[in-house]
Image (cartoon, rainbow, N blue to C red; front, side):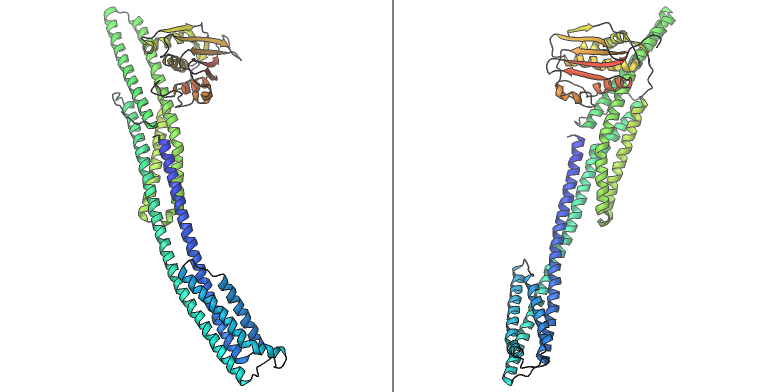
Length: 521
């Protein structure tokens, strides 16, 4: 699995975990708030019923119309509050229904108790400030008042029962919410730990191994090989590094052999000058190959390092969000875990910076000079004889002009293009490669390399010159997907452009523009 995929999966799991934790916390808080709301309403009802009882006593004592109206207002308010009181528990709902029934009976008793007085007041037979009732009416009122007070006492008792039940439910809800918080923190710690292990295993350790490899090869240990069977981006870079080290070793051995040959010829023939010139030419050729290898390594290191920066920023960003959101809620061990993850991310960033610095060491300034494309092409073909050995390839090469270029860079571009032509005509019994040029705008030369090989689908033309972009499976055609990216970068540094045309099974044509050399300009 690719590293980028692993990091995306880790990020998505972290987000999903955070969402689940948030939903659980929200639902628990909603339930707790609902229970608290019921508890608050029950306390208010207890206060209102107590005030209703007090008003009942005052009315039975003084029989003032103000007390009568105040009692009716209190009773209506309590009734309205009871209508809005609900509970999801069956036991509590039964108590609430009983309180509502008692409230209705209280209202009926008060109506019976005050019926005769209201009739008397209506007929203006009783002064507004007090009561002058018959003994029988007073006895009846006393009996009804006692019943009313007993009913209100029943309501108070039921409210106390309901308050106790609500308190139990609230305690259970608080316990459930506390448990949810603990489980959520443990889940987040587990996710963070898995993310840390994923980063350490997939990125930090392999990058550190690659850095140690570059140090050993740079120190002269050309027999060192990373040797990995990973199929992700790190594996691609490691295999490219091993190939580079192998080529460096071959070049070093070749150079040692050349030096031995020079010494032998000096002794045997005495043609010191001629042998020195020959040695210098061959050393320059090998040096150009070494420069191409360094540029190849630089392209791989630079591209892969930048590809690794994006997921690293995601990981660092989410870790920072987690640290800010739940950091204060974690214990010392949890904060230590987050700090370890953040530190690992910083370490990986430093490793990437080291890899980039190593790649920049292989870059040299452009040295523009007149270059014969034809001579350069012949040199490239000589170098590619090994790749074409045993193949029947028809080379059709037009006369080519001189251009203004850096010879080593242009040589690398031609090598990549011709190597591609040899590789993608492998399955053609009559392979054919045509190399020519046309005049471009503003004194430019447009060079073309055309083959009748596997070709490509034009709908993927935007990916063709991208780093690590491949249009054919590795099992069919080997390669790392960086050759054409190097061609485009080299031509771009010369102020030119690159483009291509092709069709599946019908071959491909690659073109680039470069400045023509003109004397006196």
